[in-house]
Image (cartoon, rainbow, N blue to C red; front, side, top):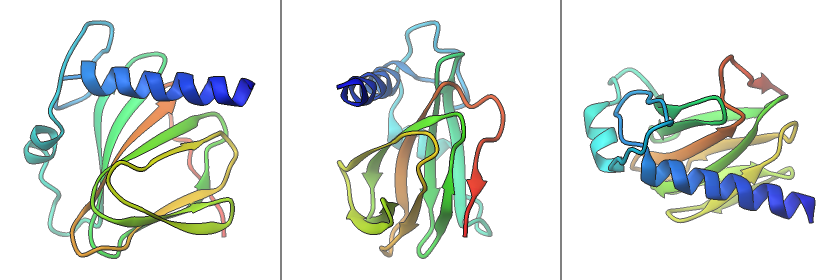
Length: 149
């Protein structure tokens, strides 16, 4: 029951930030804001040489809201977060996510909750960019991605 409440709380926080965050760069979410995902992507074109792009949309002491864009064939290798839970929403594109040791197909509308210390990965399995919304709780004030092999 506690896990279910944590998932619900994280998802509600993600939705609140999605609808209340508006800056194209990191915003302090103590005020009410609103944004448009297509505008965020347009304002932050992915450099031609890059395969993965992380855009910070909003952050306060409780959470960090990123938009990640993965080029065709790009992969965020298996890793875990020691001190952060992560909720991921697939906004556009098709991909695969490593969850509990299995690669799962994902597409627009898919939601994944990943508790801290659980190994996960994401790969773009399509021809277009894979765009995901990633919410970390608590806020990602310092790097917390531990790579695994």
